[in-house]
Length: 258
Image 1 (cartoon, rainbow, N blue to C red):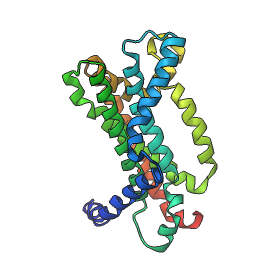
Image 2: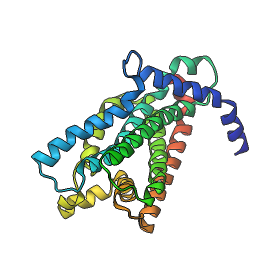
Image 3: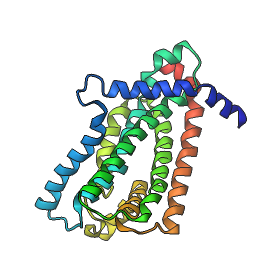
Image 4: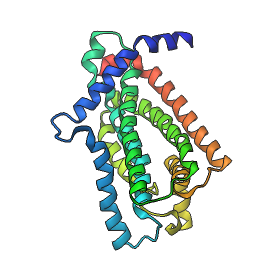
């Protein structure tokens, strides 16, 4: 274990460079640059609030905050896993030249997405202040579900990165999958409107549990139940272990397929 830690510390400067590169590439030639990390969730919140609170008449208290809090969780997962999926392929030139721990490329995408997550979280706080929404003490515990979804996304990202090297069709299929996943995550609709059968399916989605915990802490002044915490920990732990296993089992063959 100490060997892995020493190896990580040795290549930590490279991780910082990879994160900086990812952010620069994402906002290259953009006039507003990193400000889009704040503006994008705010603009989407306005559009979704107009459509779903006025046209579809969702009766949710402070619907803009309800939508924005959902975006914080789902958009991070989507961005982190989608970018992680191509992290090995897009770094083929470097991997072929020198030895670099290959998980760093996946980790850099997760860290880059985490920076966007913090910007989206800041946008949520700004909207809460602007709308004079009470900021409860439970909001200080919101890092718990955020940490869980970050670790969960890392596990999924490792699996996707390893499989995509061999099966490039995953890149196209995953965008379809995340579109469907969004509708199976209560980002824009309340759970109360769902029939019992569909509600059961939605609750099987790990993101739903993280999102409910996050909303409870930020907006509803409620602590997560022991059961929710236990399920969340088990989900992130199992997926991370599976991700590490799949990645390390396949990493020696990356050079043959990139």
